[in-house]
Image 1 (cartoon, rainbow over the protein chains, first blue to last red):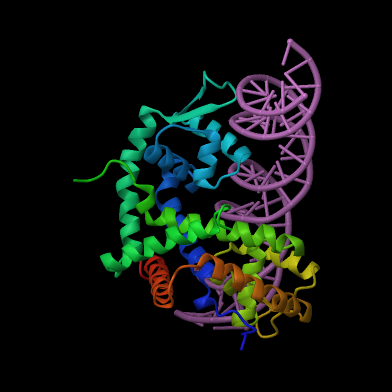
Image 2 (image 1 turned 30 degrees about the vertical axis):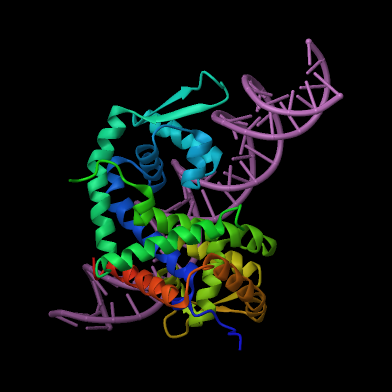
Length: 149
Length: 149
DNA sequence: GCGAGTTTAATGCACGTGCAACTATTGTAA
DNA sequence: TTACAATAGTTGCACGTGCATTAAACTCGC
């Protein structure tokens, strides 16, 4: 007995997207806007902080941002003094993007705030549940990756 | 002992957003593009299907789409013949948006496909885990809602 | 019933985004 | 070595988005 209607409150993509938008809206408007940053820029900075300097291509993969969009975004981040662009010496097609001292300083201020917002979202969820939630989200992402789809 | 760096694989907003983007990309490009629809349009149609006809304001709340953006999006959906706009007789400021027969037909074709994509994403997650996941996502959304924040 | 304030929707405008096209460089095969 | 394909990054262009503003209709207090 197939349902004709989608029950939104039980439809996983809707539930995921809704939370994603709410998270981005809160942190983006309340916090990042003060720094002249968008959530997309924040994601780029966090990836650089977490994984170190990256080629733009890899940065795009890790942030799910289009290469052309990322190119212009990095230009803006350079202008803000938060990251540095450097042509790779081995392969001059490549561009290495890395945090500057100013970028690292900005992250030192922002990361604790990000954690607070994360904690607000996770209020009422036990440690075990939270771990299960994260595990499920990681699995879902793998299920949707090109090599497994 | 606070961490300086965010461990991305353990940072909930990152995990949520990543899955959301992947879901939207797959379904949007593989399926919706054929119908000339964006994921945002799809969300509007699903809300109308799930909750029935709505005022534009309420539609905006349910889809997390800005009122001005939604106004233009509804115009496009009307042009596609999928929804109908109708001035409310009681309050002429309001606009009632509802699915047309063509819109309902499109949803009948799309919903089964959407369920398949949902199933792909949830592969390897047990029924109990999936229920817990959805409960957690609903709670997270409530935690981030204006009245609880 | 009148006027201030609120709500709903639409529009002007600037901007970020994604796709396609292009340049430059590197890899590969004859 | 040379020719062809693949990769990295940038840019032109059209378009969707969000913010601020405007217009219209409604609510509430007096």
